[in-house]
Length: 132
Length: 276
Image 1 (tube, rainbow over the protein chains, first blue to last red):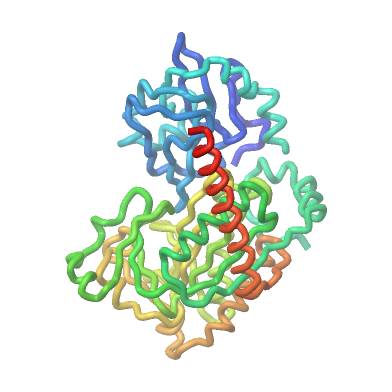
Image 2 (image 1 turned 90 degrees about the vertical axis):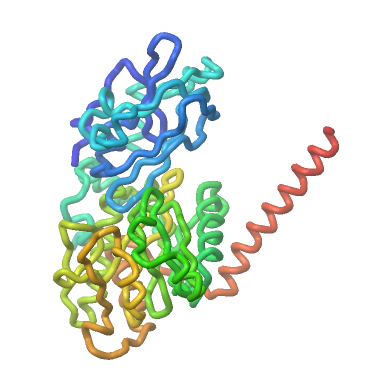
């Protein structure tokens, strides 16, 4: 497994304490699992995602990932309506391990309260969380 | 001597901060409350687990719990799969009054029944600085060492997690993680009947058969000895001081929480009524 210094933690995205990332793409936000999360979970064998059009509040469980006999819930970084889901993960869930910030993205959402973005962690704050 | 779990190939992220983790463990006095619930209906135990997870998340229970129990005959399905691996008609199970319950853990279809030792560790993995992989790995080690105490050599198998004796599976693992808290756990065949496993492809694997310690050893085991062995290995491997609580204390702890919940629900209901 990776040392903290080996983790890929891009500067241009935000993070949650529950190890999701969020990236602004115009007016929508793309969401995925961080490199730390995928590394901790091990080989991901199944990803369950919501349907397009479903809405959730910040912190709500919106799906789960299954790895090494463990199902882990995943949570909304900000509240919003799901406008896209990564269909590729149905047949190739390992993309979350391989490219967590690109091909392994989970959902795209339209935020309900754009101000919630400001409460997300930047890379430095997320690193503090990881170091405990 | 360092504890074996942390010596094994563990998460390097944790390795780097090993002394910090060790210090934190000492500071927080890693205690786990252990309760033997005896035989308990699957759905009742599930509700209990959900309650405990909530208590740990909201801090009203500030120690992890280790539940030892047995279930009456039941089949459970993993979160994402399992029913396709039932190879008898559902009506056959209905006649025998055996339920099939889909649940939120990982893994595939499995069977629980009297004589099988089921252990549910309900633990905040973040607080105990364990990755999911380390935790699953540790649960396997607990089973391997327990079997070892009874002279049975088990191993891991690349095909599937859990513990194996050659092509036969002795123990299984399936956990769920909610806000960092792991629940569900492991099931190890001790004295239980293995026949119901022939009604499914256990863990979704064809050509796999199950075994039990009784079958391997040739006679019935003393369940208390098995539990004691497992408690000892759990405590050593995960570095917990194990504190046994009896059923009455456990019930009281959970009952208080449930009372609080219904009080809150009543208060919320009253608030809503007032607002309406």
